[in-house]
Image 1 (cartoon, rainbow, N blue to C red):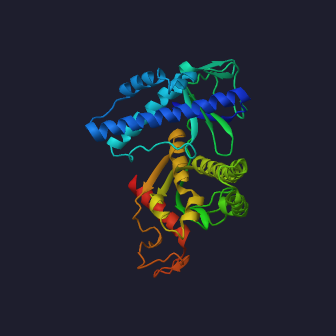
Image 2 (image 1 turned 90 degrees about the vertical axis):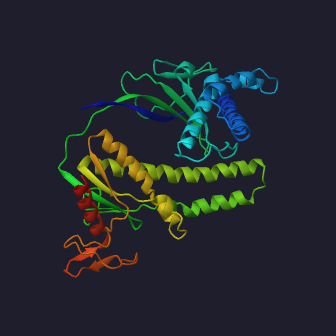
Image 3 (image 1 turned 120 degrees about the horizontal axis):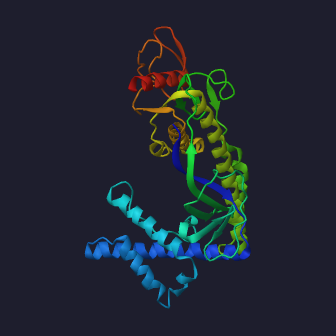
Length: 376
Protein backbone atom coordinates (compact mmCIF):
# COMPACT_ATOMS: atom_id res chain seq x y z
CA UNK A 1 0.00 0.00 0.00
CA UNK A 2 1.12 3.54 -0.70
CA UNK A 3 2.07 5.51 2.37
CA UNK A 4 1.98 9.21 3.14
CA UNK A 5 5.23 10.51 4.59
CA UNK A 6 6.73 13.86 5.41
CA UNK A 7 9.55 14.43 2.96
CA UNK A 8 12.02 17.27 2.62
CA UNK A 9 13.00 18.51 -0.84
CA UNK A 10 16.18 20.59 -0.91
CA UNK A 11 17.02 23.14 -3.61
CA UNK A 12 19.70 25.72 -4.24
CA UNK A 13 18.61 29.34 -4.43
CA UNK A 14 20.28 32.67 -5.12
CA UNK A 15 19.14 35.50 -2.82
CA UNK A 16 19.25 39.16 -3.69
CA UNK A 17 21.51 41.41 -1.65
CA UNK A 18 18.58 42.50 0.52
CA UNK A 19 17.41 38.93 1.05
CA UNK A 20 20.93 37.80 1.97
CA UNK A 21 21.26 40.58 4.53
CA UNK A 22 17.85 39.78 6.04
CA UNK A 23 18.66 36.08 6.27
CA UNK A 24 22.07 36.79 7.79
CA UNK A 25 20.38 38.87 10.51
CA UNK A 26 17.86 36.09 11.05
CA UNK A 27 20.60 33.48 11.42
CA UNK A 28 22.38 35.63 13.98
CA UNK A 29 19.24 36.41 15.96
CA UNK A 30 18.17 32.75 16.06
CA UNK A 31 21.62 31.76 17.34
CA UNK A 32 21.54 34.53 19.96
CA UNK A 33 18.10 33.50 21.22
CA UNK A 34 19.17 29.85 21.43
CA UNK A 35 22.34 30.70 23.38
CA UNK A 36 20.62 33.16 25.69
CA UNK A 37 17.82 30.73 26.46
CA UNK A 38 20.36 27.98 27.09
CA UNK A 39 22.22 30.27 29.48
CA UNK A 40 19.03 31.05 31.40
CA UNK A 41 18.04 27.40 31.59
CA UNK A 42 21.49 26.36 32.77
CA UNK A 43 21.50 29.06 35.46
CA UNK A 44 18.05 28.01 36.73
CA UNK A 45 19.05 24.35 36.78
CA UNK A 46 22.41 24.79 38.56
CA UNK A 47 21.38 27.50 41.05
CA UNK A 48 17.74 26.69 41.74
CA UNK A 49 17.50 23.04 40.68
CA UNK A 50 14.47 23.69 38.48
CA UNK A 51 13.75 23.10 34.83
CA UNK A 52 12.64 25.94 32.57
CA UNK A 53 9.84 25.10 30.13
CA UNK A 54 9.47 26.22 26.54
CA UNK A 55 6.62 28.51 27.60
CA UNK A 56 8.82 30.34 30.09
CA UNK A 57 11.54 30.78 27.46
CA UNK A 58 8.95 32.13 25.01
CA UNK A 59 7.78 34.70 27.57
CA UNK A 60 11.41 35.66 28.19
CA UNK A 61 11.91 36.20 24.44
CA UNK A 62 9.05 38.72 24.44
CA UNK A 63 10.71 40.57 27.32
CA UNK A 64 14.08 40.59 25.53
CA UNK A 65 12.54 42.19 22.46
CA UNK A 66 11.28 45.10 24.58
CA UNK A 67 14.71 45.92 25.99
CA UNK A 68 16.95 48.52 24.43
CA UNK A 69 19.85 46.09 24.26
CA UNK A 70 17.98 43.36 22.36
CA UNK A 71 15.37 45.42 20.55
CA UNK A 72 16.88 44.41 17.20
CA UNK A 73 15.32 40.96 17.63
CA UNK A 74 12.05 42.51 16.48
CA UNK A 75 13.58 43.35 13.08
CA UNK A 76 13.45 39.73 11.92
CA UNK A 77 10.59 37.26 11.72
CA UNK A 78 9.57 35.94 15.12
CA UNK A 79 8.97 32.39 13.86
CA UNK A 80 12.65 31.35 13.40
CA UNK A 81 13.32 32.66 16.92
CA UNK A 82 10.46 30.60 18.35
CA UNK A 83 11.70 27.58 16.40
CA UNK A 84 15.15 28.04 17.95
CA UNK A 85 13.50 27.77 21.37
CA UNK A 86 11.65 24.64 20.26
CA UNK A 87 14.93 23.08 19.12
CA UNK A 88 16.45 23.88 22.50
CA UNK A 89 13.45 22.29 24.20
CA UNK A 90 13.96 19.14 22.12
CA UNK A 91 17.66 19.11 23.01
CA UNK A 92 16.85 19.22 26.74
CA UNK A 93 14.18 16.55 26.33
CA UNK A 94 16.75 14.26 24.73
CA UNK A 95 19.27 15.09 27.45
CA UNK A 96 16.94 14.28 30.34
CA UNK A 97 15.88 11.08 28.53
CA UNK A 98 19.61 10.19 28.32
CA UNK A 99 19.51 10.09 24.53
CA UNK A 100 22.00 12.93 24.08
CA UNK A 101 24.59 15.00 25.87
CA UNK A 102 23.88 18.35 27.53
CA UNK A 103 23.05 21.05 24.94
CA UNK A 104 25.98 23.18 23.85
CA UNK A 105 26.15 26.83 22.86
CA UNK A 106 26.12 27.62 19.15
CA UNK A 107 29.34 29.12 17.82
CA UNK A 108 29.23 32.12 15.52
CA UNK A 109 32.02 30.64 13.40
CA UNK A 110 31.32 26.92 13.47
CA UNK A 111 27.59 26.43 13.86
CA UNK A 112 25.34 25.72 10.90
CA UNK A 113 23.68 28.86 9.58
CA UNK A 114 19.99 28.09 9.30
CA UNK A 115 16.53 29.42 10.07
CA UNK A 116 13.28 27.48 10.17
CA UNK A 117 9.98 29.00 9.03
CA UNK A 118 6.61 27.40 9.76
CA UNK A 119 3.44 27.91 7.72
CA UNK A 120 2.60 31.30 9.23
CA UNK A 121 5.95 32.79 8.20
CA UNK A 122 6.01 32.18 4.46
CA UNK A 123 3.76 32.42 1.45
CA UNK A 124 3.51 29.65 -1.13
CA UNK A 125 1.65 30.77 -4.23
CA UNK A 126 1.90 29.65 -7.88
CA UNK A 127 5.14 27.76 -7.24
CA UNK A 128 6.86 30.74 -5.65
CA UNK A 129 8.11 30.94 -2.08
CA UNK A 130 8.21 34.24 -0.20
CA UNK A 131 9.52 34.40 3.36
CA UNK A 132 8.33 36.73 6.09
CA UNK A 133 9.89 40.21 6.11
CA UNK A 134 10.68 39.87 2.37
CA UNK A 135 8.97 41.58 -0.55
CA UNK A 136 10.12 39.26 -3.34
CA UNK A 137 10.10 35.44 -3.70
CA UNK A 138 13.28 33.41 -3.51
CA UNK A 139 15.06 32.65 -6.78
CA UNK A 140 14.99 28.86 -6.41
CA UNK A 141 16.56 26.46 -8.91
CA UNK A 142 13.86 23.79 -9.25
CA UNK A 143 16.10 20.83 -10.00
CA UNK A 144 13.11 18.49 -9.51
CA UNK A 145 9.41 19.16 -9.05
CA UNK A 146 7.61 19.04 -5.74
CA UNK A 147 4.85 16.42 -5.41
CA UNK A 148 1.69 17.39 -7.25
CA UNK A 149 -0.50 19.57 -5.08
CA UNK A 150 2.14 19.84 -2.36
CA UNK A 151 1.57 22.39 0.38
CA UNK A 152 4.81 23.06 2.33
CA UNK A 153 4.45 22.90 6.10
CA UNK A 154 7.98 23.94 7.06
CA UNK A 155 10.75 25.74 5.19
CA UNK A 156 14.36 25.72 6.36
CA UNK A 157 16.83 28.14 4.82
CA UNK A 158 20.53 27.52 5.28
CA UNK A 159 23.93 28.64 4.10
CA UNK A 160 26.85 26.22 4.13
CA UNK A 161 30.53 27.13 4.74
CA UNK A 162 31.11 27.07 0.97
CA UNK A 163 28.72 30.00 0.60
CA UNK A 164 25.91 28.00 -1.01
CA UNK A 165 22.32 28.88 -0.12
CA UNK A 166 19.78 26.08 0.20
CA UNK A 167 16.09 25.87 1.00
CA UNK A 168 14.58 22.66 2.35
CA UNK A 169 10.82 22.36 1.81
CA UNK A 170 8.97 19.87 4.00
CA UNK A 171 5.70 18.55 2.62
CA UNK A 172 3.56 15.44 2.39
CA UNK A 173 4.48 12.93 -0.29
CA UNK A 174 3.00 9.63 -1.40
CA UNK A 175 5.53 6.77 -1.52
CA UNK A 176 4.48 3.72 -3.48
CA UNK A 177 6.24 0.43 -2.69
CA UNK A 178 8.14 -1.40 -5.40
CA UNK A 179 6.95 -4.68 -6.82
CA UNK A 180 8.13 -7.65 -4.74
CA UNK A 181 11.60 -8.91 -5.67
CA UNK A 182 12.98 -12.43 -5.53
CA UNK A 183 16.50 -11.49 -4.46
CA UNK A 184 18.00 -11.64 -0.98
CA UNK A 185 21.45 -10.29 -0.21
CA UNK A 186 23.95 -9.90 2.60
CA UNK A 187 26.27 -6.88 2.76
CA UNK A 188 29.74 -6.76 4.24
CA UNK A 189 31.21 -3.28 4.61
CA UNK A 190 34.89 -2.74 3.98
CA UNK A 191 37.57 -0.27 2.96
CA UNK A 192 39.30 -1.88 -0.02
CA UNK A 193 35.84 -2.69 -1.36
CA UNK A 194 33.15 -0.34 -0.13
CA UNK A 195 30.60 -3.18 0.01
CA UNK A 196 30.78 -6.87 -0.74
CA UNK A 197 27.50 -8.56 -1.62
CA UNK A 198 26.69 -12.22 -1.11
CA UNK A 199 25.72 -12.35 -4.77
CA UNK A 200 26.79 -10.14 -7.68
CA UNK A 201 24.35 -7.65 -9.18
CA UNK A 202 25.03 -6.72 -12.83
CA UNK A 203 25.85 -3.06 -13.23
CA UNK A 204 26.34 -2.60 -9.48
CA UNK A 205 29.13 -5.01 -8.49
CA UNK A 206 31.93 -6.86 -10.22
CA UNK A 207 31.76 -10.59 -10.94
CA UNK A 208 32.76 -11.39 -7.34
CA UNK A 209 30.02 -9.22 -5.88
CA UNK A 210 32.28 -6.36 -4.77
CA UNK A 211 31.62 -2.62 -5.06
CA UNK A 212 34.80 -0.62 -5.55
CA UNK A 213 35.52 2.08 -2.99
CA UNK A 214 35.64 5.44 -4.83
CA UNK A 215 37.73 6.99 -2.02
CA UNK A 216 36.38 10.47 -2.70
CA UNK A 217 38.44 12.08 0.05
CA UNK A 218 41.67 10.54 -1.23
CA UNK A 219 40.89 11.67 -4.78
CA UNK A 220 40.73 15.31 -3.63
CA UNK A 221 43.34 15.05 -0.88
CA UNK A 222 46.00 17.00 -2.80
CA UNK A 223 43.55 19.78 -3.67
CA UNK A 224 42.38 19.91 -0.05
CA UNK A 225 45.96 20.06 1.25
CA UNK A 226 46.81 22.98 -1.05
CA UNK A 227 43.73 24.88 0.06
CA UNK A 228 44.49 24.24 3.73
CA UNK A 229 48.13 25.35 3.36
CA UNK A 230 46.95 28.54 1.67
CA UNK A 231 44.53 29.12 4.55
CA UNK A 232 47.27 28.61 7.15
CA UNK A 233 49.41 31.32 5.54
CA UNK A 234 46.70 33.98 5.73
CA UNK A 235 46.58 36.44 8.61
CA UNK A 236 43.83 35.74 11.11
CA UNK A 237 40.92 38.14 10.80
CA UNK A 238 41.85 39.27 7.29
CA UNK A 239 39.54 39.21 4.30
CA UNK A 240 42.01 37.00 2.44
CA UNK A 241 41.73 34.42 5.20
CA UNK A 242 37.94 34.47 4.88
CA UNK A 243 38.27 33.84 1.13
CA UNK A 244 40.75 31.02 1.70
CA UNK A 245 38.40 29.48 4.26
CA UNK A 246 35.62 29.39 1.68
CA UNK A 247 37.94 27.61 -0.78
CA UNK A 248 38.66 24.92 1.79
CA UNK A 249 34.94 24.55 2.44
CA UNK A 250 34.27 24.17 -1.29
CA UNK A 251 36.67 21.24 -1.51
CA UNK A 252 35.00 19.59 1.47
CA UNK A 253 31.58 20.23 -0.10
CA UNK A 254 32.70 18.65 -3.38
CA UNK A 255 33.87 15.53 -1.54
CA UNK A 256 30.64 15.26 0.47
CA UNK A 257 28.42 15.84 -2.58
CA UNK A 258 30.15 13.18 -4.66
CA UNK A 259 30.06 10.69 -1.81
CA UNK A 260 26.37 11.28 -1.14
CA UNK A 261 25.47 10.99 -4.81
CA UNK A 262 27.36 7.69 -5.14
CA UNK A 263 25.78 6.19 -2.01
CA UNK A 264 22.27 7.20 -3.09
CA UNK A 265 22.68 5.46 -6.45
CA UNK A 266 24.25 2.38 -4.84
CA UNK A 267 21.67 1.92 -2.08
CA UNK A 268 18.76 2.52 -4.46
CA UNK A 269 20.06 -0.20 -6.78
CA UNK A 270 20.42 -2.66 -3.89
CA UNK A 271 16.91 -1.93 -2.59
CA UNK A 272 15.36 -2.31 -6.05
CA UNK A 273 16.98 -5.71 -6.67
CA UNK A 274 16.40 -7.39 -3.30
CA UNK A 275 13.44 -8.09 -1.04
CA UNK A 276 15.56 -8.88 2.04
CA UNK A 277 18.82 -7.09 2.86
CA UNK A 278 21.03 -8.22 5.73
CA UNK A 279 23.73 -5.96 7.15
CA UNK A 280 26.10 -6.03 10.09
CA UNK A 281 25.59 -3.76 13.11
CA UNK A 282 28.88 -1.86 12.95
CA UNK A 283 29.85 0.63 15.67
CA UNK A 284 31.41 3.30 13.49
CA UNK A 285 31.93 5.58 16.51
CA UNK A 286 34.32 3.05 18.02
CA UNK A 287 36.03 2.23 14.71
CA UNK A 288 37.05 5.84 14.06
CA UNK A 289 38.93 5.87 17.36
CA UNK A 290 41.57 3.78 15.60
CA UNK A 291 43.78 6.55 14.19
CA UNK A 292 45.15 4.21 11.53
CA UNK A 293 41.68 3.58 10.09
CA UNK A 294 39.72 6.69 11.05
CA UNK A 295 40.27 8.57 7.80
CA UNK A 296 39.39 5.61 5.59
CA UNK A 297 36.36 4.63 7.68
CA UNK A 298 35.02 8.18 7.63
CA UNK A 299 35.49 8.37 3.86
CA UNK A 300 33.62 5.09 3.37
CA UNK A 301 30.68 6.52 5.37
CA UNK A 302 29.19 3.21 6.49
CA UNK A 303 26.75 4.96 8.83
CA UNK A 304 25.29 6.88 5.90
CA UNK A 305 24.92 3.65 3.91
CA UNK A 306 22.89 2.11 6.72
CA UNK A 307 20.72 5.20 7.16
CA UNK A 308 19.86 5.24 3.45
CA UNK A 309 19.09 1.52 3.40
CA UNK A 310 16.84 1.86 6.46
CA UNK A 311 14.51 4.54 5.13
CA UNK A 312 14.51 3.28 1.53
CA UNK A 313 13.63 -0.24 2.68
CA UNK A 314 10.81 1.21 4.81
CA UNK A 315 9.54 3.32 1.91
CA UNK A 316 9.64 0.69 -0.81
CA UNK A 317 8.40 -2.38 1.04
CA UNK A 318 11.72 -4.12 1.60
CA UNK A 319 13.02 -5.79 4.75
CA UNK A 320 16.31 -4.76 6.33
CA UNK A 321 17.76 -7.20 8.89
CA UNK A 322 20.61 -6.12 11.18
CA UNK A 323 22.97 -8.87 12.38
CA UNK A 324 24.65 -8.63 15.78
CA UNK A 325 28.05 -6.93 15.71
CA UNK A 326 29.67 -9.87 17.54
CA UNK A 327 28.63 -12.41 14.94
CA UNK A 328 31.89 -14.01 13.61
CA UNK A 329 31.08 -13.43 9.95
CA UNK A 330 34.71 -13.39 8.79
CA UNK A 331 35.90 -16.42 10.77
CA UNK A 332 32.91 -18.64 10.05
CA UNK A 333 33.13 -21.00 7.08
CA UNK A 334 30.01 -20.50 4.98
CA UNK A 335 30.33 -24.06 3.64
CA UNK A 336 30.64 -26.20 6.79
CA UNK A 337 30.09 -23.79 9.70
CA UNK A 338 33.53 -24.20 11.26
CA UNK A 339 34.87 -21.13 13.08
CA UNK A 340 38.55 -20.38 12.52
CA UNK A 341 40.68 -19.72 15.59
CA UNK A 342 41.92 -16.34 14.36
CA UNK A 343 41.45 -14.11 11.32
CA UNK A 344 43.80 -11.08 11.24
CA UNK A 345 42.83 -8.19 8.98
CA UNK A 346 45.74 -8.84 6.62
CA UNK A 347 44.30 -12.29 5.74
CA UNK A 348 42.12 -11.70 2.69
CA UNK A 349 41.81 -15.31 1.48
CA UNK A 350 41.79 -18.53 3.49
CA UNK A 351 41.08 -22.24 3.16
CA UNK A 352 38.89 -24.06 5.67
CA UNK A 353 39.70 -27.53 6.98
CA UNK A 354 36.79 -28.82 4.90
CA UNK A 355 38.68 -27.76 1.78
CA UNK A 356 36.52 -24.73 0.91
CA UNK A 357 38.54 -21.73 -0.33
CA UNK A 358 37.13 -18.38 0.74
CA UNK A 359 37.50 -14.75 -0.17
CA UNK A 360 37.27 -13.11 3.26
CA UNK A 361 34.71 -10.46 2.28
CA UNK A 362 32.51 -12.69 0.10
CA UNK A 363 32.44 -15.35 2.82
CA UNK A 364 31.46 -12.71 5.41
CA UNK A 365 28.64 -11.43 3.18
CA UNK A 366 27.25 -14.96 2.76
CA UNK A 367 27.38 -15.54 6.52
CA UNK A 368 25.64 -12.21 7.22
CA UNK A 369 22.87 -13.18 4.80
CA UNK A 370 22.43 -16.60 6.44
CA UNK A 371 22.35 -15.05 9.92
CA UNK A 372 19.89 -12.38 8.79
CA UNK A 373 17.52 -14.94 7.28
CA UNK A 374 17.73 -17.01 10.47
CA UNK A 375 16.88 -13.96 12.62
CA UNK A 376 13.74 -13.26 10.57
